[in-house]
Image (cartoon, rainbow, N blue to C red):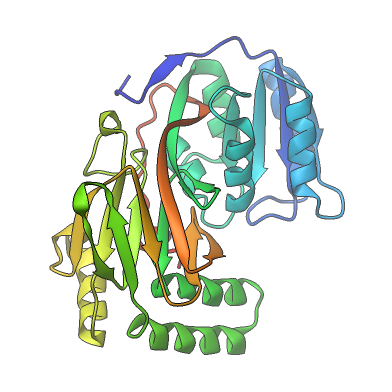
Length: 308
């Protein structure tokens, strides 16, 4: 036990599991592998394979069955959506690594593969109460970044799709906006100012705050020149990026971010876009996850936080 806000896990007798074979690292044989694993564990259940790309519909069906555990083997966006559906008093869930970045699965299960993560959680698991942030009604449980650096996620999506020409164009567009658009922010206790980008880390992965503080770690990045961008990138490799003079760190339980025009963002590795104002709030208990009792949180790399 590490002060994660844990409870003893209830008996797991039935699992409803969503397996998205079209997702990042999930292969076509995963549904049969999942069935075999449930049989090995002596647990009843059903494997939901989304039809015609209706992943959210499959997740809803899994929750409606009201099992002891809903397991999700899919991408980052589906993991985030499932956590939002579960809520603080809903079904116990396991968000297994099946995507490209796997930010939430890695934070909860470390570098375990999905079979090991599920097996270890069922055989010697605890219930972890996970806090999370909310921006304009959209939730995140690991990290969020607001500002022009989030535009690099568009390039990442183009690379995923195999369109290298589009990827190059999006990188060029992102670099132009990195040194142009700025955000205005206002957090509690009078903390306000302007920044190129703002990163919010949840207590699940923050190394600077404890979950007892019931807040997000809010880091503002004040980069003005290309030299600032490259220095910050170098700092994140050789030491804690918080030590860079362009970074200011504090707590945020609620606040607002404004911009002239839309605000590009990344929530738990997935690109989104907000209108010219984004309202931020922290929820100390967002959902309940079944995790192995010996698992420490695994912080993402700076590149994972930025979604690139």
